[in-house]
Length: 70
Image (cartoon, rainbow, N blue to C red):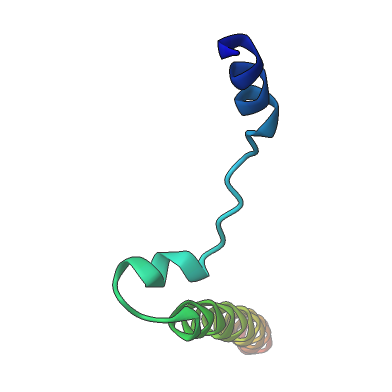
């Protein structure tokens, strides 16, 4: 009996499949808080990428102005 029960428990075990929504449950909030956090992270990444492209184009414009002045 003990062997059979042990084998059932071993083969019935599965890996935990948590997602970021469960982190908010710990704090007493619902899944929408985690969704909002992920959305804000995505917006910050997009904003940083666009800002980086602008900085590169400004640097190129400055180099062209220096070459024209020389």
